[in-house]
Image (cartoon, rainbow, N blue to C red; front, side, top):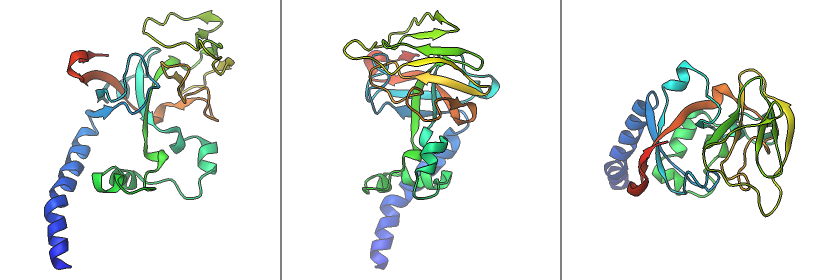
Length: 213
């Protein structure tokens, strides 16, 4: 038993310590993230690696059109929380569940610990509408979306009609409007400002597509 513990500490102790150190340091300025799904296609591809910058949004609110990273709605939406059969995990628990040995254990992952990435399309005070194609109207006027996004061409998107965004909340969509779990589908609809912890700033992988976002 002693030999096993010694071997475990030798193999995993340094990794756990380094992971904790990097996580602690990165939490204030920036951190790397990867894209796990196709909800932000075509601009962000699955397995893209990004730098998430954390300073700017501590000084100002997100702007319409910015890509933000935030805590999963399963951590803040009241209906999702009410459906849980156990308390929300603490930040410490989420950290340890993100370590490599823990991520390999089936059933350990908690959706409340996930980070999501979407685009802000409506800010506080906006009256937002999303039509069947996934196009956005603010105060009854279609907005200019200069970035590429995928409309709902084969079947209609979920519609949102004339919802006013409350103070300190935002309305977010995935760029892949036909396949994104976003503000259209959460029970509480809006993303609270205090759930946002950064903005997508730079893509560093794959090499052929590196650059600022």
